[in-house]
Image (cartoon, rainbow, N blue to C red):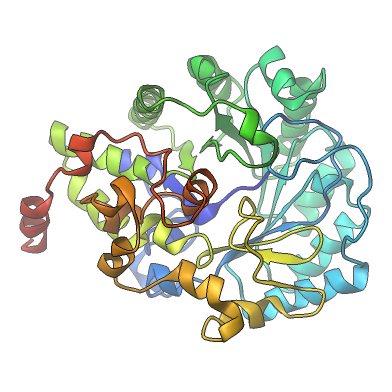
Length: 427
């Protein structure tokens, strides 16, 4: 499963103010190194809507595990119709020429693709920032060294609990030990690595244990995903609102603890822009001096309005182009017969009606008028963008419903920030 740069809420950044490596893409500041350097502002896009997309490319559906929440419904078998080497080369060359923000290789399990090293070499050689999302069990000492040698930007390893909890999620005994072995092998050669976890009602009670484990292993980056119930994930229980709130409070507390200790560990949440609003409302209630900056950064980012189909894209194993890797029911084109760049730039064409509708207007007020339910009346739409549209589409049957994963109370959705907005605008 894939890491999603622009779907992310950086808890460490917003709650503690510490500069983070992807601030230039996520919040329009910094130089991509984790430094706040005004002289390198050219590295940041002029606006969140002007960002070239992060592209998740599912290079193979084959997987050695049987994860209960797999959106691709992958198994340990070969699947027909996947891209040939020549087609892979054409995709890489087009993405490089189009200068996408990043290329994320996912699956299935991408490490099972027989030509993964060649894909990495070609993509990185053409200037693409390449990351890998893997279950970690197939990482060998030689492969970890190769990642480092080629210049892989980041290896994200999936973890969903400690020991037997993780193994139950992954459907194969020993998956936990395999993932941790893969992480340690990458660390040994200096390859930047981190963990990603999907929060569900089956593992949320283990979060303290997971965070303690992250500290013991000195894991420097961790991403907590909110479940998107697609593929096999439809059978997995999403968090209740009160569980989601407690989870975010726990992450905030841990980020605060790490910052107080001088630890710059990176902690993020994914696929739920409401996390940023929840964090901001807490800052306002508690009188945080960082609230004004949090508000500014969230407004720049725009949340879900600038993610699926705009700042984020997916190429599946058959070459189909989707708004993101979860939204397989919407196909925008196919790289076997079209260039990705042509499809992404053709929003004005009649054949691109789905993409044009999804992107909507640059005016958040106009976009909000098209929605229904709580999102249509929430006062924080400009910050959140209506949540994660893919989840809304799946659970409502259409993309313009409300994000049912939003855990803000009705009162919080109607909290008026006008006075605060006015006071910060005057500063």
